[in-house]
Amino acid sequence: MAEVFEKYIKTNKTIFKYAKGRSVESGKEFHVYHEIILFLDGDAEFISEDIHLPIKPGTLIVIPKETYHQIIIHGNHENYCRCVIHFHDSPEFLDFFCEKKLSQAIIAADKDIRFLFDKLINASRENGNKILDAALTLLFNEIAEKSNVFASENIQNLYVKHAVDYINHNINQKITINEIAKECMISPSSLSHVFKKEMNIPLHKFIIKKRLINAYHRIMSGEATTTVAIECGFNDYSGFYKQYKKMFNVTPSQKVTGFNKS
Image (cartoon, rainbow, N blue to C red; front, side):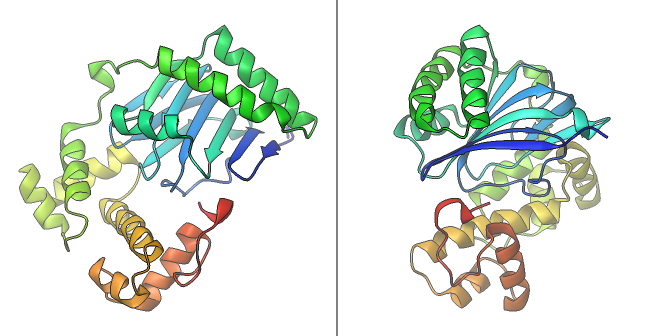
């Protein structure tokens, strides 16, 4: 069996990870931070709220915070090799970029982008992080210049996209699958089926995770945890507590700091 490895560069604001093998992030489809992934090797497809497409080695993906996403690995997970960058305190450029693009950027990493990642990989092997900030500044410039618009065949299924948009715009309401299906003009069972097939997550679980993100923001702004739990659609506080802790690695009463966030 091939060795599974991870190498890190870590600062107070950023983590760069060079990894091969099964992801420890499996099951964590939402983050409260922006993320950049360079897919280096393996057989995979990328799924998000906006797109669904196969990806090949050399694909770079910019994922805005709080956006559902999955990379589905086919075949041997030992071949899955990638670079991942997490931003605890997001640079102003990245906030602006993600807000204006509204969806992920998919970029074919050319020699300039690969050169910068090679620098970061070498730095991670040497346990040095002085190069991180300088390399990221150059990387942002490359991303801004080379981000592209998706081909129409890569757009997410229209029923799924409509459902996701409805959930995002009504997350403060106690929405149900029946209401979402009615809005999409499809039966609840058909919507649940196509959603699971296209997104690789059950619709009800997707709604729960969106509610948890909503609860996170309200709790961080100082609202009472019990009130937030009820108003975000969780009638059982014990269940809310367990799911919140699993998603954010802290209890609702604890403040999320640094890379405790998932």
